[in-house]
Each structure stands twice: as structure tokens, then as C-alpha cells.
Image (cartoon, rainbow, N blue to C red; front, top):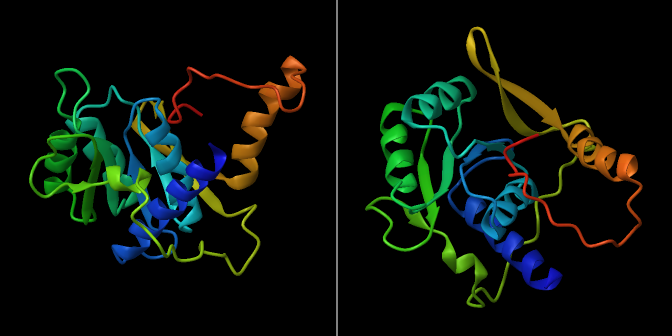
Length: 192
């Protein structure tokens, strides 16, 4: 339900704040197109941080190259997808990136040192701290960093809140979709 999603997002944001991450810390997200990816993305925003969703197909070298440019503090991923051990891949990238302080993951059998996140969907959190409120208008503030590919390699692109809303709104306006129409998207959150 929307109430359960809202609670999970708030718990996720509180966990990030509990790690000691500061406002505007960059949090990389490499997750499949699942509810966890949406909760993670919105939880990062609710915590007052900047989300950096990465494509699932990126391997070790791509992750290190991209995150090394932006100074990400945390990587959020999953344990496995098929035979690929994403949490281990993130952990190995963190070894090479001085800025990464936390590697977190959803799913079973996470490697040592990876913080489990599945509890954000539980009911064990009685008191959830209030969401971070930015003292200045957030609309023009950087909300996410997406990545493009240019001749010089992977290039980070800062996106403010207005750009994120406009990118989604354009689809609805062009398709003339009625308000409150249920939507199903196969587009991963990492694809702006």
C-alpha cells in the first residue's frame, strides 16, 4: 500500500541518516527494477541526499570510474541477480574508492561487511525520525546524478528536482494519460 511504501521510505531515510551521512551525500544505487529500487531512490531523497542510480550491466571498472568522479559515500545494491554477485561487486569497488564508507544490500546471503536493508520493510521501527527538511527551496537543488557516455567515457550529469519531475511529466502529457491511471513501467530507475 502507499502507507507501507511511505513507511519503508522513511525507515530507509532514517537508516541513511543513522550511518552519519550528511545532507547532500551522494548515494549510489545499483538495483533491478523492483520495489526496493524505488524505496531506495525515494529514501535517499527523503534523507536530503543525492541519488546516483547506476545501470545493472555496469561491472567493476564502470562502477569505479563513475563513482570515483562523484565522491559517492554509499552503495546500495542487492545480494545476487542470477549468478552475478552484486553485493560482492559493490564491496570490491568500495575497496578502490576512498570515498565509499558504506555498502548496503537487499537480499539473502550478503557478504561480510555489507549492511542488510531488508528490515526497512518490517514493522520493527516504532519511532521513525522526521524526514529531512531542506531550509532552502529544493526544486532547483540537485536530486540525482545520472550518467551519460561520451567519447571521454562515463560522464555524470546532475539533475535537479524540477528536471526529474519534468522528465516523468512529459511522458504523461505526450500520451494524454488521465489522472489516477495505474502505470506499469519496465524502465529502470537508473535510466533517465
